[in-house]
Length: 160
Image 1 (cartoon, rainbow, N blue to C red):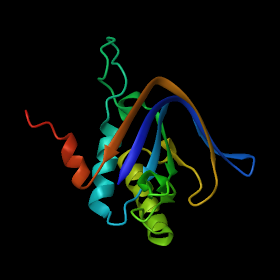
Image 2: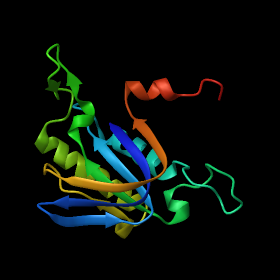
Image 3: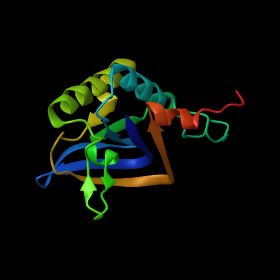
Image 4: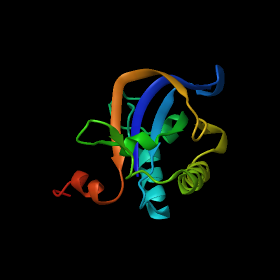
């Protein structure tokens, strides 16, 4: 599972020229599912997303508070293209991305885990499988990539 996490001042998703979801301060999570992702990947990325310390605390110390501590919102947007690669002819290839039907099920399960772990009304999402216009105002900008599976091991601090 791969998530591109962006700290935002606000964000919205529009489908067919109609805003279907919007948030104030919080994070936008572009969510890509790998063909081999499991429930364990969802749980790991949920924990990372909700625990990521992207804001300062009341004393002004940076990188001390996460989205839950700030009582901010999360806007998730499904994005299979996060597992895209380029062929020799520079054409996109999405064979590493989970196929649509199982991805839709797993994506909805991910949203459910987020809602169970935080607050239902704080978790918003786009429209799975639709062409979406995603608008956001970056705060910082602050952007992180969260990863589960073998690539997640690259980010492990060996000094701990």
